[in-house]
Length: 374
Ligand SMILES: CC(C)(COP(=O)(O)OP(=O)(O)OC[C@H]1O[C@@H](n2cnc3c(N)ncnc32)[C@H](O)[C@@H]1OP(=O)(O)O)[C@@H](O)C(=O)NCCC(=O)NCCS
Image (cartoon, rainbow, N blue to C red; front, top):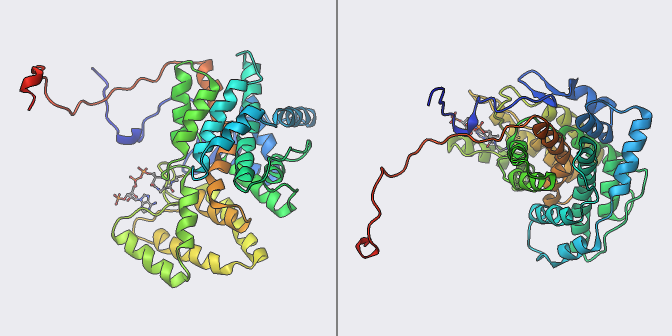
């Protein structure tokens, strides 16, 4: 066939058009707005509105959006009971995948018009945070806590997880990470979601599949893996020695590198600045010293590799006192917004994804009778 090309990992392949997000060496835009401005000037609900509806909300639209989100919180008791039945050792990401899939059987939105799909997306934003918070509490032997209408989404997640409203610093920082994680063009989980959308399947199936893709340590799972790494060391010297040895062995360090960004990740710059301020407030320069000891040899090597957003996010979440296995699920609580926006965009102008493969198997042969198969 003409025009056949082979690119492992689809590197450099343009697999579709999108108006949602632009990821480039020099910039990251959500619907045209630079991430640095969004991080400074808006809250997560405004970003969610921007991604799903195409524009930042007016005051009235934001109030209506929040009311809709508040109204969707609260899992059916059947879903909570199903979560209760999952063995305690099962990772939170697996519980989230099951929880979203199970909640799908109780989807309160019935139709499939554009407006229905947007409402379903808002419902899924609520479902993800509800499942994570419910599981977290059940694991501690506590019952899920009802949300409090009117709170910011980050505040709501913290309230539902801890059972009490949290301080403004924690809310602001969690909100910032939700903004930074909300959308990132054709990354692996969004692409998974778009492939499912392209079969004209449903939004819950697409989000469930995307959660499976995000879980891997080469993708969203990197924030948990990065924190596990930081916690391995007691001193900066130990971390420095380990990382130099790891680089010489060509071992990958989680939280570093990116398929597109080769000169640094904008989100990481923004979050690292805030993470350092938080470390001052919390008096955790010991952790920052280890963070820097891991980072410096990697960014200073001949072919530098830079931290991605997961690296500063890991230490931010840690200093906020969040348990490790909540880090990637919190990524989902935000990225579900981008996935749903892409689902809607894909189905609005669809062609099924069906690439080719290069056959590397046995040459053609005849089927031998069973007696002759050795
Ligand atoms: C993100 C990632 C999957 C991108 O993969 P990719 O585009 O296929 O890049 P490659 O794995 O081909 O890496 C290119 C080179 O950089 C090196 N490299 C990339 N990421 C690295 C890392 N985290 N630590 C050490 N070296 C790394 C590779 O070893 C390779 O070196 P080489 O050219 O000498 O062989 C990869 O950088 C990675 O695994 N990072 C760690 C996981 C992570 O943080 N994921 C979150 C992404 S937001």
